[in-house]
Image (cartoon, rainbow, N blue to C red):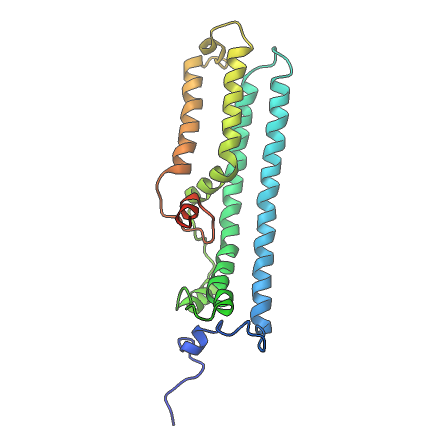
Length: 232
């Protein structure tokens, strides 16, 4: 009687299941291939949800800018409404990005520890405990990145340039379309112009801080500028 358990998931043969996976005389197991395809499908679906939110944000921004600059008599604060609307879209997209990251992180685990080893059997798996971690994630799925990191990703990719366009447009609107001093023109109702300008500047400064403050990134597979520079 032997104490060896060939089905032990910590066994090296199980851990390195990707080795030889893509040899000419051997194909990937059907279950693993279908699992990978299913995860890619879920990731793609959530990617499409992100794109739809971005599309609506761009459409709303374009409509607001068109109306704001169509007549000098139109109030400038409609551009501020556009900035607030973009903030709402940013919040929605950050929440969806956290969901998207669940599926992408699983895809990256399979790519790093199965398919990459199958393509290059001389390389070891990236994480020897990948099977246990992936199994735990299937039993108890959890969000893997914080809301702030999701906001930072979407700001860097999409929303910071859009917000910059709206802020510049608003400044042009209050300076070039009124003969009065721009700080007076910036007033909204009973709120003085300097207060409005200060709030707008503080909002954009906060977005910059969230987007570019130093941090440890946890999203798997995201192409960051820092990582791209390391590869040069």
